[in-house]
Image 1 (cartoon, rainbow, N blue to C red):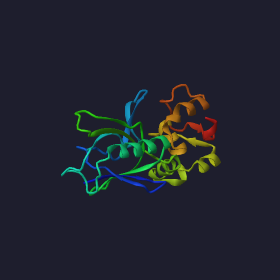
Image 2 (image 1 turned 90 degrees about the vertical axis):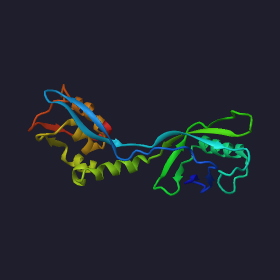
Image 3 (image 1 turned 30 degrees about the vertical axis):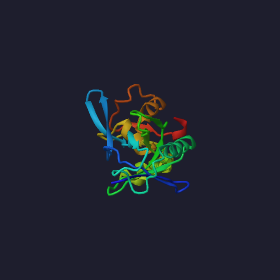
Image 4 (image 1 turned 45 degrees about the vertical axis):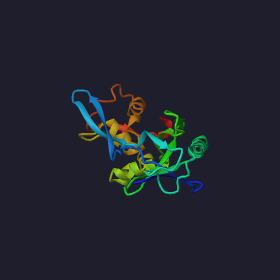
Length: 212
């Protein structure tokens, strides 16, 4: 396996000379736990988990039997390239060959230094998965399995929603606006004192998201 960084804008590639000891990718969504009055705790699906890790790479000062082919032994050339991408805010593809991992990431500050007098450089990279906000909004709507309920323009036409058994303001906001955390603002807009307490048959006004 090799680790490759590819600049999305320029298509420049950087093959790291030594593979890090390991990395972990979490798939799926987080789970949000809410305390519901008279009901107790409930668990609701949250946002998709993002890849956020700090990885350390060795940049040897010369070609070794464990470095990738073509390594010239110029560690600071790699450091300079990574620092340039970090300063520019460029989106990179983090690719681990022989695995399904191919993620868009942003680079945090590039930390580097030497330890043992050999000229080898150790560089630590903070990788944070990049996500288009518009894509996330569309994805949330699709995950409901009911596009007509999730689309904001549909809700703007209706202007209100009648609560049914099992509904929560968090779930209504997630379906309507794509953001369950707006539940408390929706409660305030409707004069509901306890955002965790709504009843079947109750009519909830659904203002435009921008007015919450």
